[in-house]
Length: 465
Ligand code: SAH
Image (cartoon, rainbow, N blue to C red; front, side):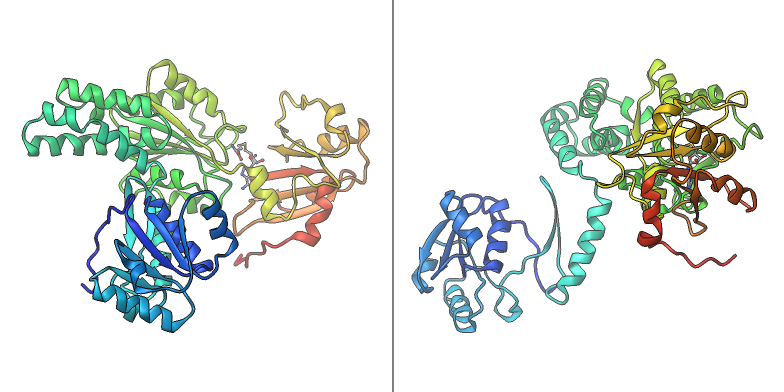
């Protein structure tokens, strides 16, 4: 080990930063997060440091560095572009056995600044012992995505139970088992998803009863899987998928997304292709509840966003009725995924000040929509499930005052490597589509913004079919 990692308590401790420029300011910002009492030594200060000085956030000694600046100092950083001063700081610090860091000069460093993942009170520090700060930053970015933002809140919550756990379980071993059960149960996920009251209750109950209700109860996460590209999953969606015992998914969830589910998890297809092989909605609702009651961590994966034409509301209503804990994880809905990947901004200062999401699903052969309002100018209309009804939709919009020349795009398999965009007008698109082989799912975008597609198109995957 080249450097020994430790965590320093520098709250209200005197720390000296030599230098008044950009790099010094960055170190000041970092050390201030740990509440150090900072003195900057430099002939002049840059704007940001001057502002902090004015706000009383640091002390300042104007002038060149001298050895006496290190009197009573607990830690020193040199961040000047003058090699002579940097060396003088290092030597003065060495004489006093003071930890010193000279920025970008490993040979003059008694300590180095790690890359930090800050989930106070949880802190992760990464160092490559100076070998490659860029590598450390990349590793940090990786950790940032893996460590939920709520980690700090979780640690604080656990800390608040520390004393009562000590009273409840006198041996260290039983205490450790208790905390292991809690951390492997649903309480952690409750904290991450903003249900701290539930988590508190769960831990309290577990403490009272001595054994853990926390570990027995399962829960359901209704997770938006986005429109297809697995990169569009949220961190939370991915985390839940990798912790799941059972995953229920339907036709819209892409293979690439399913590949990210924990391998050991049971995968249940509940898709519907029109009425073929459909599992009835009530049956899905009840299955979710039953699995959770059996203690499983259940993920219900829905294409796009679960609350946009996804019947997500119905599925969790059953859970709510039966007292099964659940959470909803939003996903990128087809409208925003397809629009972005097709280079069609859904709103635009010149063309559309509002956007509407509607379903074009035929009900008894007719589509029941407020055509007059959909035909209004200066808006974009996104139609889900609109392929079958396309001729009717175009005809009705024209009949209610939309220009026959209004642009329309049909986006097939949006955001996937198979994406295809067909553009036309209300007058021409139905015939254009009739000639082509179309692959579901497809989304219609109607409005002047569609005319920007040719100019803004950027997503052009190489197709191997
Ligand atoms: N909850 C989903 C929508 C479910 S309705 C969401 O938020 O996206 C199903 C319809 O969504 C499909 O008929 C199609 O119109 C649209 N859709 C979903 N994914 C799509 C994709 N990758 N490309 C094009 N349309 C898509």
